[in-house]
Image 1: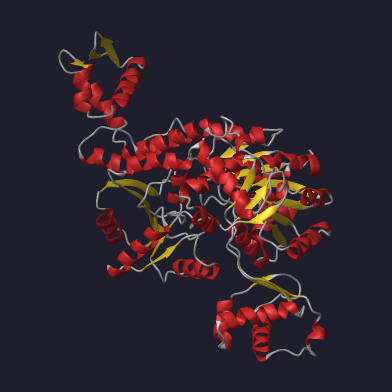
Image 2 (image 1 turned 120 degrees about the vertical axis):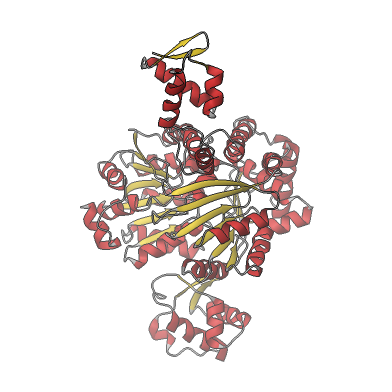
Length: 629
């Protein structure tokens, strides 16, 4: 039974809300959509069925770092899992495919661009697949904030593995339009949707206005003890704010995508273990970070959508205790959000130029390149052609959505190796002193080296052996040349995959759905973010929940807007009702305008309550005057 599996492998006595229902739907063979908020335990909903179903569970996820973490965690629980993405060597890919064909693994994680590889899809045909999982399913919707064209290939998997194989789609944040789009694009046969409310009752959402944000940040952190995350939009600001906090005596570190993998892991672990209180980070930090006792999440810079904000703010208070999600907004932020729209949708001629220069940079001739994958040094590309990084990155993304290339940005990979020489051959091996020291250190420090690729750290090996990191690197290369090991050094280079042969710039077209309509949708998302941050006439949570389709949401009573109403005597809920009935009962009644002024509430709330009381027969409305019935 599912509960037995949960207890055996995870040690939990019961499921979280909706996990059991989603698992039951999957095991019954129905296509299922799960909308679970950040921290709601999405991974359990497919990992438990994977252990109960007879064949392989294929998990499509866009986050390479997250798939690595999940596979590592599964292996620690003695659950066999593999992953496939463009950063793997051919040898690693073949080893993983062999294990899948032989039925030696239960879960296989795929990055979406793998679905465009015909050879890989042919291999998939030979496997017994029992379940297809689409994580971060909002990426399949062109209405969503993080659309990935390669996700559109997921539905074609059914033609290969069998139409009867159910699909489980999971996401933490989706509007009603995105929800419908997910089910349509994945060709759902049934419409089993399980959605938890987006309400997080233990989080107080607060907006603070300040033109000098540094001072406000210090006030917030000094007023709210406990572990915190501060989200910013640039790597430079990560460093600067972390240094500021340290000068002010607040334990802090910073995290962004440009750090080496070992450095990322070290900083993440010191923060998770409580040795560092505040992590100043870009949005590269957070996915898969399951630290339950984060008391405060501060957004120093505004995100581009409520979906992003909700996911990042939702990393606070996963233990259910009172926590805070704070936005620091300034008068300049509205203009900055407007510039973000311009950067995200550059001029079409600029994008054609980026396409042409990328082909020159990669030495791909016109008419060539179809189906080929190229390493792409983005920073060097921008430096070589003097291109502005932000619009250039956006241009590559739009070219991907238009179907000309697939730009794969998140490819930072840690060093790894596997011993490929038989154990009996190792005894007579003659090595240089440095190679001998490094090899012995590797064999002592890491397990499973003869069966699979294992992540290593050249820095850790250097410290253990007293050698420099360059000496360790050269020794590992030497051990690879003599075929004792297969060594894959870490890489941080993105990739470009050509989904069509290279075209002339004049033939590059951008359909309305890819450019104009996407621009309109982003404009609407930015407007919703502005309304959340700068609106002053509505409960912040109520407005956010309405954005996610929860039209019956009520005031939270905890956000800064609700608290300010209580302090200033503003009427809410039952208080508003009593106030209107009291005024209507005064001699001669009251005009609607007088009631509006006396209640000191948003006009639409007073109007709604007046209509409700009239429908109940409690009051009489005559010529703009209100009387008690």
